[in-house]
Image (cartoon, rainbow, N blue to C red):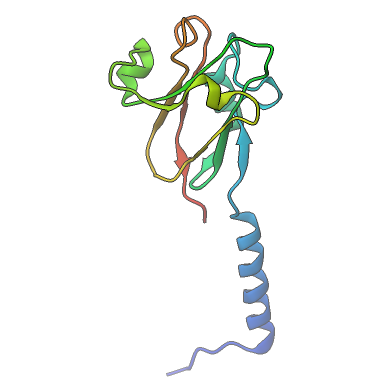
Length: 139
């Protein structure tokens, strides 16, 4: 029976590969909407689809500029609530004051579907201020 062993070159290669994977797997901080920030009239569903993939432990930053009307951040419980902009069972994550300026940070710390929306006035239904995020595990 042959023994399986590693020589010095193979060990160095494995250590280098492991170190490079650690660099690749660091969590990212993502500003929701990019340079558009969190504002009325920007399509966040499309933005999320184009920005994906998102990963477990990434941080989303919701913020808006002082010149725009205030916006909040809610976590909706399911697809129906998201589709209909029903906030009756939603969880308020950040009120308009918390989203202003530097913004509100949310860590994708669970492997699940996250439904986000703004609950102010017509932000969700008419202003396109809603999105779905599904974080993937890092390998």
